[in-house]
Length: 211
Image (cartoon, rainbow, N blue to C red):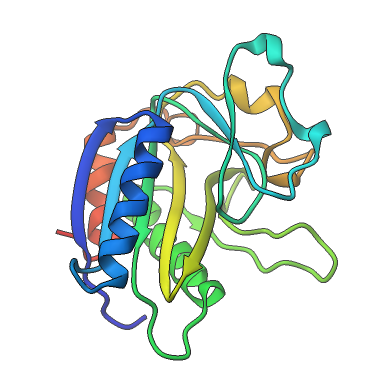
């Protein structure tokens, strides 16, 4: 991977709608070259977000009380909540570089971060005709620990990844995540026994050359 240093922005818990407004502003600034490539690390209160192709049958029972919001990213349903580290990537793509190329780079950088945290992980290629296997899986247990959904507009990326650190995993079981009914979502806490959000933030920022 070529060097691609990012400017790091960090927040704690930010409502999803407010985060989308700010992300739109950041993307506009990057398109106008008013800011550098940026990694924004944060978390969200409990919310499901769905892509444009998400079937109604994949949505959770409304009685669960967790809002479901439509989003402009790629991918299908995902869950956000406390104890999950979300990273939004506002990056201007190089000439001839597509969003799929950059998503692959994001996967590899996150695999590197997880390795530094003591969790062997891997990205997966999508077999023809299958649901996209975008994200990161644990190498030993085969569980999915990071979801990724991104888009690009006028050469600048938006949205990003969600890494399950130490939050409640039960809401993942109330819907069909990532378009894969059999996916087993996991967290660093489940795989490693204990983990620190601060340590995870530091490892992720380092993997993206973000400061």
